[in-house]
View (cartoon, rainbow, N blue to C red):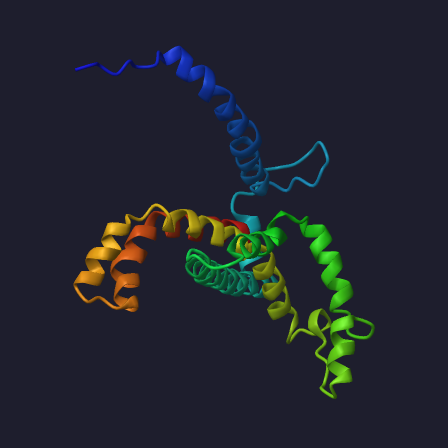
Length: 225
């Protein structure tokens, strides 16, 4: 039996060290510095003093801060839920042998590669309450036009909608990759046991997608915050 040749540690370190240094320099170090600054009264000048957790106590006793934190949690819950559900649903549909599935995959994934600034500016024009083309179309149908981003009642839902539209294609691609790694013989065995579509989805598809599901939910939560 041929033994597997191990890669020498210096070679491994040569490949891993640049990434670790970049991660430590541009991710870990700024987080530590930001936390250290949050414990002081630093405002940009050369003189500052240590305050401990005073800044955190002031923040969490402020009603506006708590309100904005609540809005962030609501935004995170809805965006994560909709992105995962839509991504999984479209992945299941486009994983079958349908005509034009490659085109639809590309069209759904396309918004994810667009700049967030460009998407924001485009939707500001589209959703303009007075001169936006969407509201003009709604008024032409004799319906009341929403205020979209100009109203507290609809602004959060509008931002969630735009965010989900731009991002769910990314999760669709992840789920497509996961679906193609599931052994087809498992579906054949389930069909022999008279398992219906729902039973095959629950017993075969979801367990097979569990690593991708965990990764997707984690990334979605990070991106939402």
